[in-house]
Length: 378
Image (cartoon, rainbow, N blue to C red; front, side):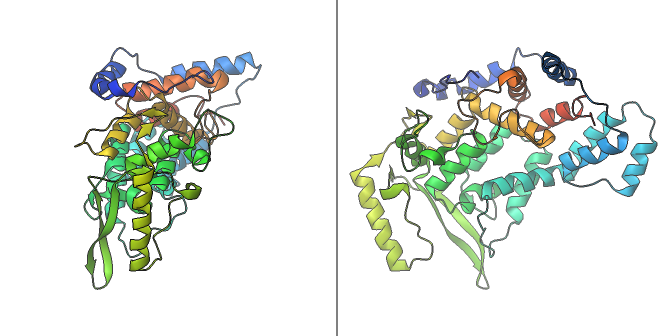
């Protein structure tokens, strides 16, 4: 993506073209192969006068791919079996085995859950079983990544029954916190940089941040079920009214730790601010008209994952590359907006297109990269 290229698109017609865009993105694209990736990498190395190092030994490759795909070392038996095998396809077969291993989903769940919570402390009285089950099963089943992200952004209901509520639960339904996390993880954009003021180094405005936060303004969280004084679950719901607002200082007052009367007073003050200076929903700087009966978070989820939003697939592909090589094609991985990958741009573009063509299969990208000669170098 060329630098300064605008990706702000005409949103009023986007949703009507949503299904068509997906089918077109998946059709007519030729499959990307591991050898295609190697050719692109080698071409860049050649232009720089760089020669590849030697191939990794079986033991090197074994430990590397185990840790990258499952987060675990191989067992002694697995190591002996692999090293003794004379099968010329044993590496590609191992990749398939690891991607089918439940440890793959557990590892990916650890990574994404950690990135979502980002240092926050989940209520220790709240069981995590439903959350882990959701993430692990989603990754192990290779649920389309765009579908998973839509579920995370729009999830509602009982947290004990719907593990996709993890995003809302860990952020206590705080609009600006959810906005910052969603933009960082799924759009590769640091929205927090213009939460309190206009971006001094780009074209982002403070209203762009709060326009996105407005999609979360109607989301509520409350205790749902207790057992012997232990919180079992919380309930996520969306109100039919309520507007986003830019609070004084760019930060919404924290309600945690306040007394019941203090919370009521703070909410009344916030409601008065909403009435005085409401902020309408917007995405990537463009206003979004949300129907009276539409759920705002569902609208945002569709906009975020639409093929029209190139940042979504680019961000995902860049993160997968970073998972396997320790560094993204664009760094940092959570700040890729308005940046290109330089000479690596064709490779990132190819990976992003392959992700869309494959139906947003993350396993497809991990498999492709793990089977490259580039990944198998020492």
